[in-house]
Length: 344
Ligand SMILES: [Zn+2]
Ligand SMILES: [Zn+2]
Image 1 (tube, protein in one colour):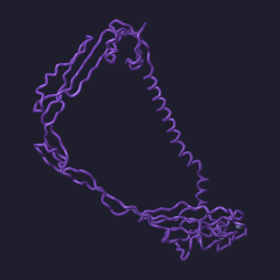
Image 2 (cartoon, helix red, strand yellow; image 1 turned 60 degrees about the vertical axis):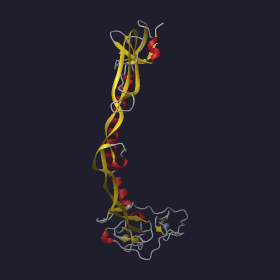
Image 3 (tube, helix red, strand yellow; image 1 turned 45 degrees about the horizontal axis):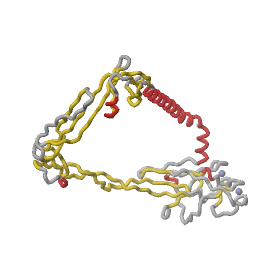
Image 4 (cartoon, rainbow, N blue to C red; image 1 turned 30 degrees about the horizontal axis):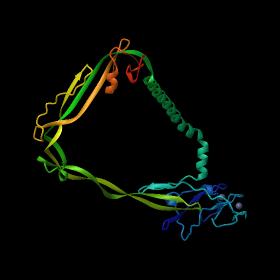
């Protein structure tokens, strides 16, 4: 990123043990002359940070396939052994280092040391990850088994021969009444016909108010022995309630008031008397608000009675005393009414 300041990655000499050598400026160990191993680079502690001035970034180093020495991105031949770098791989980079704004960076591990640590403790890492996983698998299998069992039991039915022992019907009419109803609305959308209004304040929505920023500092390994450091900030918000005026009021409307119903065990279903009070919209007037019917046959099986709700035509056609087969749940003992078939 333009404007980010660049700093030296550090590396340690693997031959003489010299520490904190500069990744960009020291491609060879100043003590023993050994070439830099790009995989020993690491991010420095805050106080070991050395700024790189006047350096133009050209890309990650190329790693010589013959001697592993790093050379600049634009080099065509290895600076150490002269091998051509045509399709040489790039230097591998460390993961970004990130800290909170008020924290300090500590020295990181190099790739070589990270991988050595992982080789030293692979069994620990693996077993820690593996045990909960295997247990999770076990639980999932058991849960699945239980679900399958429950579903299986619900679908498990036995067939019975049943005799029609009677009929039942019920028909109902919902009745609405015109009169005062208590309602509540935002005062700016209250109906004109409202009366008996009481106003109060209530939270209507929430507003997002900018509330500073949340910042962190990120270090990015550029793969050429340098890294950049920059600040990343995200705006923070807090939510604040916005109050509105709420109105509780009464208004005259049609609303459900009662149900008129009729029922019987014969084959001639009737609608109930409604006895509506008044017809025009007046206070206390009533009107119909929907009709419902239910038709059931009563069935006698072996030591058990069942009821099946049916369409009116099918219900009317099932003679008393006729014989039918019916599937019944083996566990829940509920009839599967759509399985009804006549016995010839
Ligand atoms: Zn050395
Ligand atoms: Zn080389």
